[in-house]
Length: 284
Image (tube, rainbow, N blue to C red):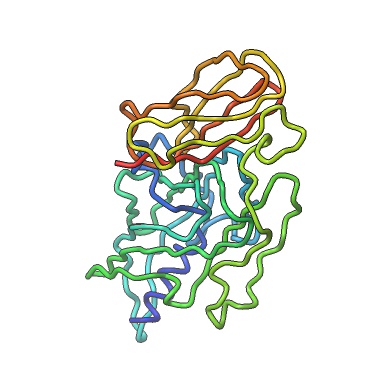
């Protein structure tokens, strides 16, 4: 049975970078509108391979589509077993701020069916290499749920700050199962104005964070004028936008939960040239 699991999960682990959570948890679930299978793959698997997947860039909205083809049969104990269906249940240990959806509302694909996975969000995570934890249920006549990593198969997603070079994927600790995370740098820079000494906006803070009703945004501006506040969810959809009058020096504003669901969001304030961004969590 372990050989069965190894074969099945070679399909799953070649799929892409996702998620600290399923995008459906923020109201944008899987379905045909999310991505379109290309139908160009001639054998089971996914494209691209993990080594060819560009790193996520902190503070930048990402949207990546991965194409794949499900298996027909697998060999186990000298027998060919039919893969009736395969479902992605969850994907963990990815950079904070990104999530996943697919072209199927139930995240399940039939024998030899073409599919696609769309990765969305704005990463805000420690620069490094993340080994994904993918849980799937394979139906080979009976449903089997397992962790693909436990079967010895791995897939890596990289995250970096803007301006950093692309560090190659490091698989040296894979056999010893020791490189669940490989750090590339000490801290995340989550926006072009975040921790940027040349920005006109500094010392951005949100208190309390997390919040379940409202929170106070505080920041320092080097100039007077009209600036734009906006907030996006993990898949990059804008949930708040408004203009505010800003004076030179200390400023404050209020953000409210209203009807927003609990989850991770990104608040930013911009003068049109520079932007400061802060990760914010709305609790139940």
